Amino acid sequence: MNANRMNPNHMAATVRITRWTRPSVATAIAACAALLLAAFVPLLLGANAVDRLTTLFIYVILAVAWNAMAGYGGLVSIGQQAFFGLGAYFTIRLSAAGVSVYVALFAAACIVAVISVPLSFLMLRLRAGELAIGMWVLAELAHLLVNLDGLIQGETGTSLVALDRIAAPVRHAATYWIALAAVAALLGGLFALLRSRQGAAIQAIRDDEDTAASLGVRVLASKRLIFVFAAFGAALAGALWLATAISFQPRAYFSVQWTATMIFMVLVGGLGTFEGPIIGAVIFFAIESWLGAAGVWYLVGLGATALLFALFAPRGLWGFLESRGVPRLLFVGYHVSSSHKAGSS
Image (cartoon, rainbow, N blue to C red; front, side, top):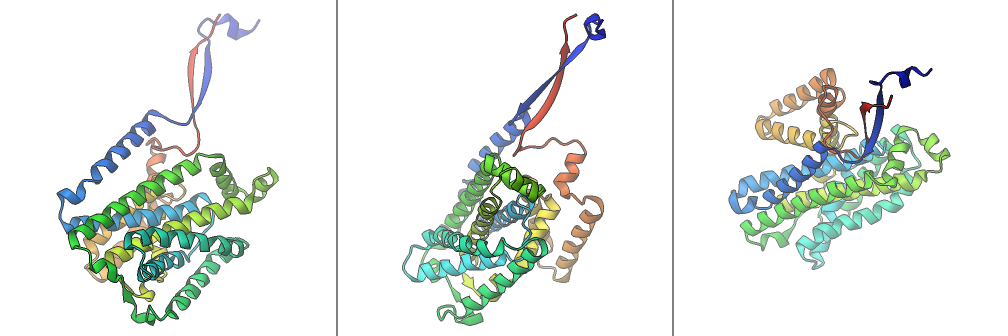
């Protein structure tokens, strides 16, 4: 006879597959509440605090965009400064053409996203290290082309003059609100994308491109989607940075330091996780706030942080916390859980 049927205390396992857990629901509600409260910051805090928080939002956008491309798409690039610089450049160009300055910020990012589509046909033919170097070459080429524009005046640069006509308190608040809306939109858009069928295809390509292709995944189209998303995010961050700095010098905006910053934030926070880039951006922002004016000690602080994480938390802070039992807050896939109940005798 079946031993299980003889045992009245036999426990039958029940497997549940869900997309939301209690922690993830609570996190989503808390995030919405935090965004709502953050909208009132310009009415409560001074201009300096508002500017610093705007900077933090830009860092979050950069980290999220690079993580989308490298962490979820498996496309490692060291040339995202191309899109960052072009976002600022097209903002200057559109503003000079008479477009409202705050409309120009978003329009410039859209233009860069459109430009990234034909570029993707070339860049995505490259793999691994070839893609990384190819993107860096593309960034240098974009830098040289922008320098040829008479409006920019070479490395001397120019300014977003239209912003000078707006009262400082209004300018600070408007830029802050646009940056906050951009963070919310990009995070929400990426979350929805990764939870879709297309998002599953993107992550399958990252894990094994050949196997994904054999299962019918449209590899190049999926890669192109995440490539364009990352380009749009970097361009929007560049346009927002210009709105806070006002001045535009090509050498500063097309510097590889921007991509190095993105990589630092993502690796410290946790590559290929949704929460990691946000945490990494906060860590970078904190180091910059504490040591930014300390000269060489700022670089020492960044180097020491990177070294400590490489030695003790190679999966980043969020990966380290997950390995210690901290539940994932936002699932982009499925959550599998099992429970046991008494079976019939």
